[in-house]
Image (cartoon, rainbow, N blue to C red; front, side, top):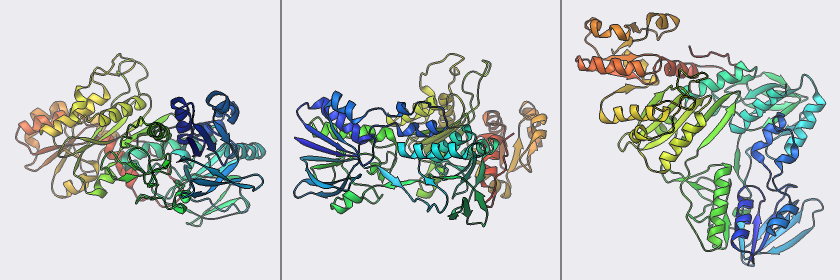
Amino acid sequence: MKIVVIGGVAGGMSAATRLRRLDESAEIVVIERGPYVSFANCGLPYYVGGLIENRDSLLLQTPQSLASRFRLDVRVNQEVTQIDRESKTVQVTRVLDGVTRSESYDILILAAGATARGVLPGHGVPVHTLRTIDDVDAITAILDAAGTGARAVVVGAGFIGLEAVENLVARGVAVTLVQRGPRPLSPLDPEMARPVLDALVDHGVDVRVNATVSDVRENQVHLDDGSIIATDLIIEASGVRPDTHLARNAGLTVGAAGGIAVDEFQRTSDPSIYAVGDAVEKVDAIDAAATLVTMAGLANRHGRTAADAIAGIAEPSVPALGTAIVGLFGLTVAMVGWSETRLVNAGRPHRVVHTHPSSHAGYYPGAEQMSMKLLIDAKTDAILGSQIVGGAGVDKRIDVIATAMAGGLTASQLSRLELAYAPQYGSAKDAVNMAGYVADNLATGAARNIQWHELADATAAGAVLVDVRSPEEFARGAIPGALNLPLDAIRDRAGELPDAPVIVHCQVGQRGHTASRLLSQLGHDVRNLDGGYRTWLAGTLSTEHEPAGTVPSISPA
């Protein structure tokens, strides 16, 4: 059997090497249009920043090493330009000299990945993506030539854009970040994105939100608000789209989400052709609809699935949760599943939990505060998503929640997970357990909450807002219109409250919960402001109208 793999990175190479492990007799040909295969594309920004010093460490395998270890016929600088399904051949063009030939296959695996959503015309300014070894070679050469005082504009504040920004700053480059939307990392809900924006501004990044590039010329980037930014380099990081042109031209089915449609074994509409990686639609774990998730982990996993199916030991792919994480100037941002914004847009009933736990026991030195958000199905208590922003410990917690989602645990059941504990690693009630306790209280009716973005309407309708923090905390910053009634005095002073619905809040929500339980037992109609003052402030700052231009840093109190 002859298997031809189009694409020699991530999913394609995972499929090829897995196939060899399963079938020593197969003829396996890998065709890659670039000069490198099996390189660590996720490490590219960190080579630009100097954290990864050895360029060769990014090259995980070479055509020679793959031939020696796996007996793979790897052909670089060659591009497949056409698929003939009837004759089971592909047309291959050598990139360096344009010579074209035909290659037959019994089984074809498409792993072409994704392409940049749009590359700006660089009239007098070099424009590069950050996706290949050639990209980083060009970028580092430009920055070396620019020397001290080098300037760069990064277009797009997604995962790659933020990694580019961090590493350019580490290199001493003056960076301007241009973002089409109102905040960085658009999958984040507003209140969760504010720390990201603060980290950027605090590290000297010139952040331009609600802005797009209108023109590029003579070492200048022109924005749609009329402002002009001088630069030596533009990094295009505004997103990617599935590379489906081969599949479309061959008559393969492309789904509604815009990717190649495949079954649970990665087979396309042609049973002799499989597809894996960023060009392929996945099944969303929340609503079972087709979706696009461009993550290396899924590409590698689905490459393995395709190889197993070809070898006759098929195990179906599982739906995608979209688990993701990124680091930025010591801040860690992680997410899984759906955001609140997406749930609202889909009209799906849900509950929300905000907590602000420490990374480990507070009495042990070095504890760092996290902001956690849990999205919960209002009817079934199923976990629909989570977002976590903070320092140490974020990666551990998002992985626990992703595992719980994959295993079908409810939000309330998070409170009963037995997780490893020692003071330097966590708390006796871990951050995940605490989110579960809040979820359980909401599910059982032991607590009622209100979200930061619902507060203004509630107070306008007559609800009384009570701040149960200390007078000192209240003086440092308070929600307009709030009455300060400290928690330790609230039992004796509850009679001072008017006959109206009450909303209580503290700094992060825990004391507010205690106050709400006490007041509800005294006969008051009471709700707790979810996540407290900290969440309200982050959300309010994130949604204030800010025109295109430099964003000030406003850190939550």
